Length: 450
Ligand code: ADP
Ligand code: ASP
Ligand code: MG
Image 1 (spheres, rainbow, N blue to C red):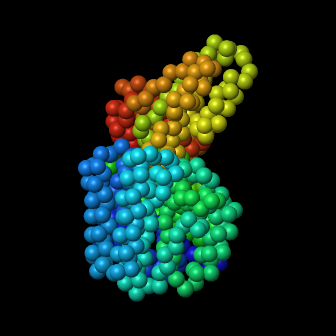
Image 2 (cartoon, helix red, strand yellow):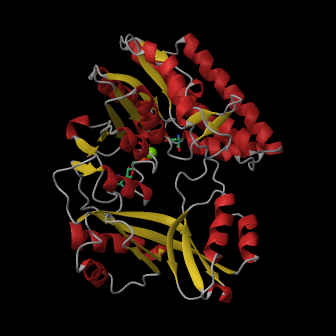
Image 3 (cartoon, rainbow, N blue to C red):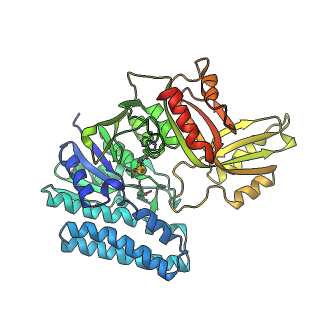
C-alpha cells in the first residue's frame, strides 16, 4: 500500500509566516504528505463570529475588520505581497466587509456560515503561496467541491458517500504530482451553499478527507507535543502520552480535551487509520500515536474537563411505574437534534446533561426556549448551569473493584452533583461546580495519574 499522509495544522500553527514556515518544514519533510488541511490563522474565526452575530456598532465593526486585515496583511507582507494572492485576500476582505454590513441589518445561520468560512479560505491561499515559494508544487483546492454536507448551517452533518466520490474524482488524480492544500471546518450542501462543521471542526475535516482518499495516516499538528494526561494549561504535572487507543482518545475528545474535535476519531476508527498529534513548533519533541490497540492499558490514563455544562432535571409524578415518559423526552430532544450526554434517573425524575459536541459555529445555544417550552408541557423542568463535567478516562474501569472509592476519597471536600459510571469500560464522569473544577482536576490527576 502506498503511504498517503494527511497533515492538518491548527490556528496557532498558521498564525503568522514564521509559524507557517514550521508547517512547511513538516510537510516538505515527509514525501507521503500529499494533502494539507488548514484552520484559519489564530484569532480569525473569533473575529468572524463576532462580525456574523451582527451586534456591533459601526466603530466596533471597523475595529474587528482592521484586526482581521492586520493578521492577513502581516503574512502577505512576509511573503513579499505577490500580486495574485494579494488580490485574492483583498477580494475576500471586501466580501467579509459587505457580509458583516449585511449581518448588522439581518443575520441568519446561512450568512453566518458564509462569513465564518472566510478565515480558512485566506489561510489556505497564503500557505499555498508559501509552499510554492519554498519550491514545492502546491495546488489550492476549495473544499466546498469536496466536503458535502446537509444544510444545517453552524453544525452541518457530512454526507460520506458524496464526499468520498468527490474527493476521489477531484483530488485523487492530483495527488501524484502536487501537494493539495485545502480548508478544514467548511463544507457545502447539495445546492453549493457554504456550511460549517462546528467550532474546532478542522480536525474532523482532516480525518474525513483522509478516510475518503484512503490515507494511511493522519497528522494533527497543534501547539502541544501530543495528547497529555490532562490539559497542560490547567495542571502543570500533565505529561504527554506516547500512545493511546482510539477508544480512550475518543472519550477524551468527547469529554473536553480540546486538542481533538470530538468527531475526529470516527473516520479513523471506521477505516483503522492511525492518527498522530504533535506540535508544529517542536516536531522533534515527538507526540502521541492514536491506534486501535496499544501495548499499555492503564486503569487510569487521563482526566478531561468540559465547562459550561447544563443540567436539566425533569420531574413528573406520571413517571412512577409508567411507560413511555423517557421516550417522549428523547423524542423532543431528537426533533431538535440535541443528543444527551449523561443521564441519571430516580423514581419520579430524570437528570440529563446535553451534548455540546461540535457546538454551533455561530455560538448559538443548544437549549433553546422552544425546547424548554416543549419539555415544560410534559413535566416540571429545572435547568442548572455553572457546572463542569469531569471525566476520568482509562481501561477496564467498570470491571475493577475499588475504582469508586479511589476516585471519591480524593474528592471528599467537593460536592459531586451527578455521577455516571458503568456504561463504558473507559470512563467515569461526574459534575462539579465551575469554581471547583480546576482543583478537582489537579487532585484527581495527582492521586490517580501523576
Ligand atoms: P488547534 O488550534 O491547533 O486546533 P486547539 O487549541 O484546538 O489547537 O487544541 C490544543 C489545545 O488543547 C492545547 O493548547 C491545550 O491547552 C488543550 N488541551 C486540552 N486538553 C488537552 C490534553 N489532554 N492534551 C493536550 N492538549 C489539551
Ligand atoms: N477555525 C475554526 C475554529 O476556530 C475551525 C478550527 O480551527 O478547527 O473553530
Ligand atoms: Mg482545535
